[in-house]
Image 1 (cartoon, rainbow, N blue to C red):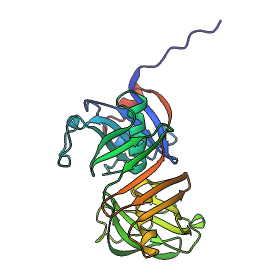
Image 2 (tube, one colour; image 1 turned 180 degrees about the horizontal axis):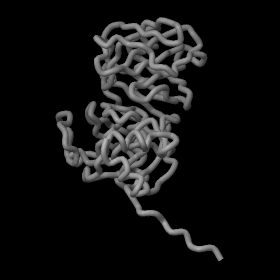
Image 3 (tube, helix red, strand yellow; image 1 turned 90 degrees about the vertical axis):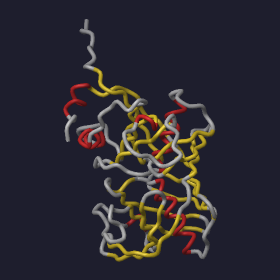
Image 4 (spheres, one colour; image 1 turned 90 degrees about the horizontal axis):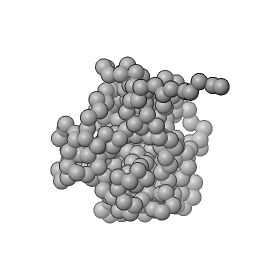
Length: 289
């Protein structure tokens, strides 16, 4: 007869999810009690010593955060405290918002349907559909001129775009599937003093583009929600338009993005993979940076 298996000391709860294979660890922390150090974020996101993810989403009420938030954020609003895989704080993540909203609904923290989510780029309206897809109002998307980057031996010109975080979206005739973008593309620090997400955008049809992305603080990811919005605007501008709808192919799947005169929306899947508890000893190991 086998001896019963005893569980190790239980640490914080977690969930794992992804949006078009842009994956996240979610940490439920309604009252903001967890000490989320950079070391803990880096360890959680490490694909060998942790759970593995492109970023961490802390699920917290806005009033539980010890920082100044965008004006109009209700303290009771669920807030997506997003951290890049390198431990740095980020303003916004379109794929993350979808997974975050789906998590709130599936765990009973919010009702299915319309749901506001707080972010450092402002409150985002979401709608959780019955089929598991989530639509996010990404807010206005604006272009601020041109800049250049180098990657894989090529120089690209792109649009400087603000989607609540900085992007350089480069439309190209190259097959973006062949690009080597493991190393970070260059950028102009005068234009992007805090780094930048760089998208390579290939039109593949009248209403369709293909995208690869290198995210600041992470590296190449299978998808980037704000990046698909930036890619859509760049693709529209290349076609002589300012507004419109595009299907965006990313390595992790497809999403639909619409840019209007006043805002932009992103619709795509949000998948929850696992729920569990971290080991308490492992968690304590990374208490200090």
